[in-house]
Length: 127
Image (cartoon, rainbow, N blue to C red; front, side, top):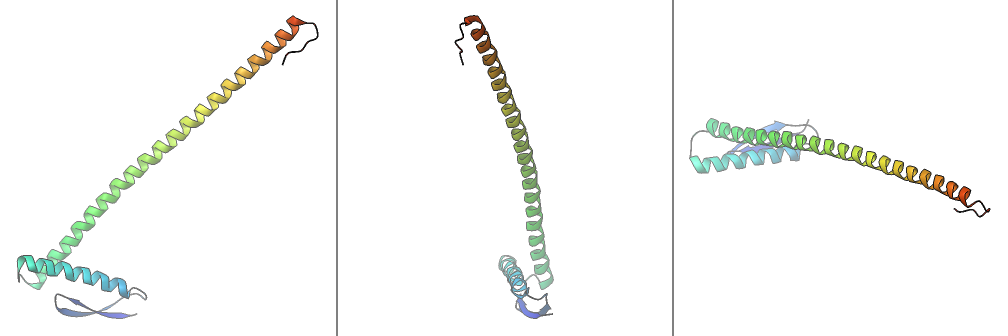
């Protein structure tokens, strides 16, 4: 299992990670260190534990906001899928109605053509 050395709030820590996750772990630690540095700049020296706690709460808040956004987007996606399905159903029903109307019109034209042919009689076929 690979190990990397990270620096957070001017302190070094040796951490293990899964193979291939070294760069990801370094990026996560760099983000945490940036957050701690920002908080330290705002609030001064308030102690490592408090800075780390505040940074963790900041990450937790972003995670909660992101989770809520994902939940809303999933609901919106479900609504759009339902609307698409309803539209497809309406389209299919509309197409079926058009086909029925054409078939009815074709039957009517065929009947009219037969009646005309019978009424003219003289062997002259129409249609």
